[in-house]
Length: 425
Ligand code: ADP
Ligand code: ASP
Ligand code: MG
Image (cartoon, rainbow, N blue to C red; front, side):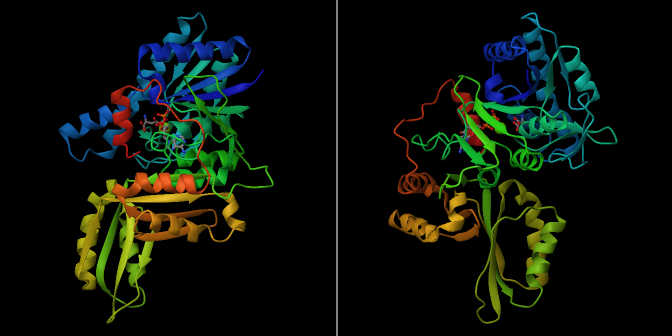
């Protein structure tokens, strides 16, 4: 008998039939004698629909009210799921983030979980119920509802697994696990049997949306093994855990991200403290910055380029206008058409020449590199957005990642696929 936390994403809950299928899976676990907490996302595209609704009345919705609204998506799922489980004769209780004791920081839209008060949850488990928790949400110490950022139900699940000392945390989605690349873009991508926390963190940070980055961070910090698998099959998926293999793959996976823009501030005076001033002001506006490049100075001025999420541009633009004026720089340029492509692999640490090979493959495929950054186990380049697919295919083949099997889209409606594309995947 185990204590299982199982999270189901929006596509797995998109319509009544899929909800019934998930309920059947939960009941089967229950009948095998396991204790079960199911964490649910909003049904199908409903978080996107709620966002659209908010923006139809206010282009820039107040963060507190937006969280209030978005949290309702998961609350619909939890109640419907509890009903579907009860329909099979097994007791179930649904708990919102607040009822499940998920206390967060007050940063609306991107709150962090500070604490989980598990008494109500464990009481319901002790009574023999399947407990259904609304993912993606919590409550501040002051009692306001918060959300954890897009994809945040993954983080809810891992945090609950850590808090109740679950034996396993299963994350069910519409793919069979973590692949060597997004299988919807690279159909020859291969499913990985396992991947280390560090590699999964780099893949998530580099744009691979299969797990929210914060969930992997929490899993690593608390030693939780995540089993990432499909809600539509019983095939074993991918285990995310501390790596045990001696021989590590040089390249485990490739990720891409089209959700960032490249900003260049032209002709900034080249003085001590300028970078601190520019990025200090950007940080004050709570805008995240990813890659940074400063060019060699010419005639006492230099160009500074960096990338930032397109969603933050609205807040960034006034900061840049003021900065350019204050420093006497020439101008700033925003390019929203770029994409970041990253290779990730723990074996890179001990294998020199991977960056050179990557650059050569991209050059042979006529892909120009705008920016480059590296960590011990990742190499990222910024390229023209329209070349991203050809770059991914070329790198995937050249680094020997191709599988003989072709990934086929199963069970996804046109609307669901469109929603995934809209999220920038
Ligand atoms: P859910 O809604 O269940 O949380 P997501 O849409 O967030 O599911 O995550 C699953 C999606 O992640 C897949 O449909 C796939 O297109 C995308 N994805 C991106 N990179 C990868 C990868 N390396 N392996 C598997 N899936 C990936
Ligand atoms: N429903 C939220 C989203 O679409 C949270 C999640 O699915 O994890 O981002
Ligand atoms: Mg997700």
